[in-house]
Image (tube, rainbow, N blue to C red; front, top):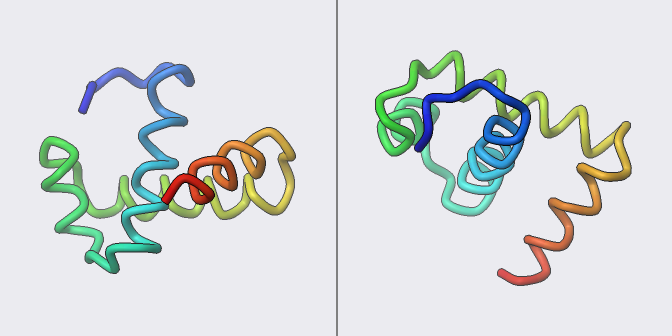
Amino acid sequence: KSIGRTRKVALPRQIAMYLIRKYAGLGYQEIGQYFGGKHYSTIIHGVQQIERGIEGDGEIRDSVEAIQNLL
């Protein structure tokens, strides 16, 4: 729920947004409320960043897959 924008904070938050969207099926506004009232466009951007990362960045893909295997 941190408001920081550093990659150290932002990437895990974006992964969480992606997984919530994928598995809980919540809308962007609902997810935004969970993350401290973030605007829905921020959630859309975060989810898209992770989708692109899964396709092009092995480290992001491995991180997301590791989390998914725990679910």
